[in-house]
Length: 224
Image (cartoon, rainbow, N blue to C red; front, side, top):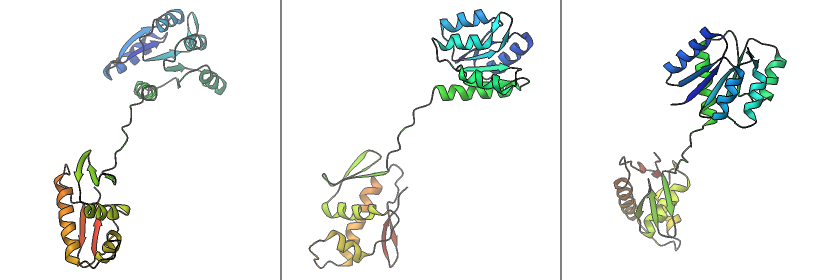
């Protein structure tokens, strides 16, 4: 559970924000003192700090500057100052966001969630291609599973995979896979395609039909 430090000298407002954050499953701690805030921040353990700029014993700008000397914890400044100079100064001192009073507690919760996402980005898994071909081993890999192919089957699949979705006629496939220009019948190509399709489908997690037939025209690779 993320911990949020609320530094606010208006008790009712501080409690209102705390209630909303707790409802959103955040743990909160409250103080109305600049000195206490700096001490708590030094001790660490907070994932974000909501910092009012006008405090009884100090200025929030100084608190922010002090915290930034030893911590990069996300800081959201809360203030009634709407002057652009104050806004820019707050950001230059290292604040991650700036919330002007009056505000909606829901907005504060949304801003907190946003800065936490930016501070702790989730790793993005690199998308793996659905079909990987290994020419050295005459293998295809689907979802990490290896499929052994004959040289002809691999050549057929490699040709189809060069342009997924493109329709290849039987004559075009024969020209691609038989470099010696031997005479081969359409039925031979069809037989190799059937065997190749069977292997690919059997090894696909969802039994995907990788090779589509276009009646009277030819074949194409159907990616998921």
